[in-house]
Length: 224
Length: 229
Image (cartoon, rainbow over all chains, first blue to last red; front, side):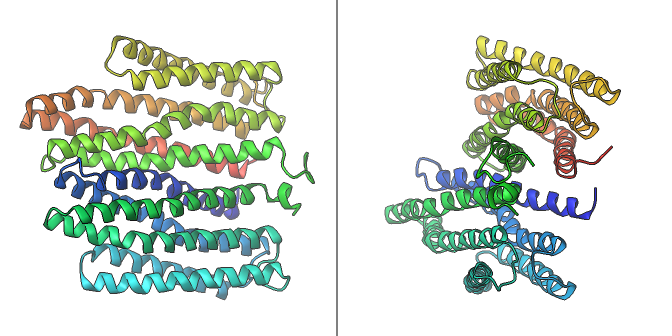
């Protein structure tokens, strides 16, 4: 047993808590959007959902530095302690940032920070796609095809996460309206936002399963 | 490695399923755990608390099913690696037993509160007792060099699985008074005595949950590292 095994374990656990915790979030969101429940119930479930949703959020951010460490140790990712240190520092800063967005929820500061977070995700998505495609073309930072494909698919999950954020925005504001007053249009907005987010959620689950599959069996799938 | 060069071999699929079962067991458990902390809050209305129970009921399906499928899937992997003595038609028997256990366990949940549901729950419990005994004995015999598992790390995983099953039983026993207490809450409304009866099992279950999670993480690490012990 060595450090690489520990990193592999942590990498698997980021998958476990990402997809596993998502289940509760997904089911709870349907209850929040269901007018058959009282406002107090919907508000409490919304609060619970927000709390549990932090787990997949953290995992998406953490899985990349952990994976990058694994790749560097294998000699198939960007080498050098400086590069890894930068990835880890950025990852941890982003983690703290995301925590602050949650803790300040409902304030203007939180909304502004969430907007910046969204732009950061676009940037992250672009960087992942560029580095993966560049690697597939033969000269990028990821030295094996399977790793570049993994990074590309991971970019897909980041993209779907952006899709969820954008489609879910009306849900949050409609819910705030609903807490103040009864509104059938707010109910409709919530239902619509939820159904728009569903394809992105399902896509993330499928992409993550494929990414995990490649990670587990790249030797057989890609011969390296 | 057997199968190298082929696009996909069965071992690849079993590994993926094995990991996904961990995802739906350990990962979903976290939702169940944090949701359960909301049930004990008296400031939540009865409807809110009943709704949280409903959420827990749904999410808990995943650990329930995943925990039963974990062992046969793990044993398929072990057979593929040549680390498990049982092969061929005996594996079919293994899956048949696992399938029956799954049905009984599902029945215990869907028929909860009915006489048949109680019978299912009792059979499920006895299957778990028997399984713990069989797993511990076969792991110990394997350590001694003559058992069904041909590597010590696998025998250790099997031992830990028995431990996880035991934690699961401890969790059930600790949690058992919650159902009747919650039914009283729904029928009679809140009272300090009922609130205490609801809070007690939720708080006392924590060591079992944490013990179970630690066991699963340790098993995952051993599976990844496969140390030559």
